[in-house]
Image (tube, rainbow over all chains, first blue to last red; front, side, top):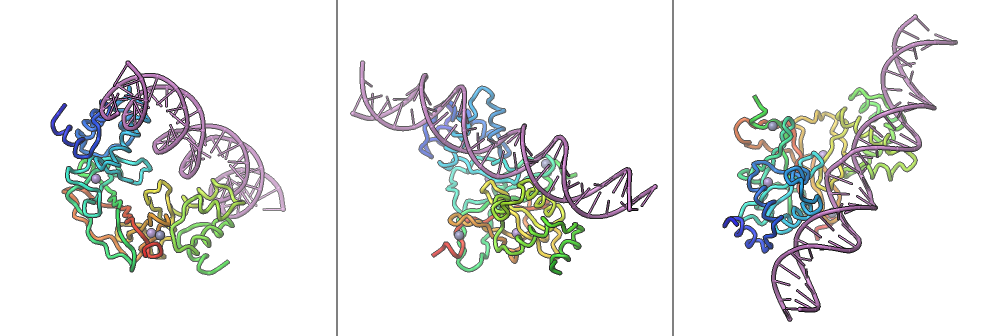
Length: 137
Length: 137
DNA sequence: TAAATCTTTGCAATCCAGTTGCAAGCATAT
DNA sequence: ATATGCTTGCAACTGGATTGCAAAGATTTA
Ligand SMILES: [Mn+2]
Ligand SMILES: [Mn+2]
Ligand SMILES: [Zn+2]
Ligand SMILES: [Zn+2]
């Protein structure tokens, strides 16, 4: 098994089971965020609930983060190595209304937002919608 | 029927049916965004699908906008009079992880975001999560 | 005014992603 | 080798969202 993979699992204190290795490898190949159904399609022989729980485990361990892109289907994408899913790690996401893909804009960090008095930000789900570079001509 | 109400309907070219008047009045009383189930609770004698379609109609007519706050249940809130639901009308929303309420931060407009080349923003769903003033002590 | 047409509503059924319970399989510790 | 705990597969359930259809209501046309 690949070194990068091993490291990702050990970094997050996760046992590298066969299923998890397959799913992590798949996630690493993606340039876009994926849904549970995407995963089901990619692994037709695997069980829905196993894939579901794998994603949830990954999310808890901060190996992936999830994105509510407004489609009603939660999307998942790999976190950066050093990610702790705290406010400073947050970035924008982009959902293309034409191709329906959701992208992590990992180098677009969320600015400080001047919230009303006594409101405290801990997390955020920031989704910009429009046309992606492929669909905008 | 109240003048403000009449105007809201005529502004958006909507017929003010009995059901719509009730729902609009209810929406005007809220300080927080509401879900379809909230509406069902408020109008137990009304039919779920009628309420559902009323919200959808209101949304299409830009009388309300919807918010994906990450709970999986779409929330709705009244638009401002002059709202056209375009990029310039967008504002942040706040979802409290303790009381689970979702607020429109109508005076916090979304800044321009420096998207990757050829990406074009048309809409956005920006949700800050954390503790609201009531829950943060 | 009466008939035709369009819109809205109520009811019931369906959809379907997400989620859970449980038993079997597998890995690790004693 | 046995016991314990974590992971997986299967099947069933959940609950909100959504749709089809016919009745009721509103508006237009003749
Ligand atoms: Mn991301
Ligand atoms: Mn709002
Ligand atoms: Zn696109
Ligand atoms: Zn709160």
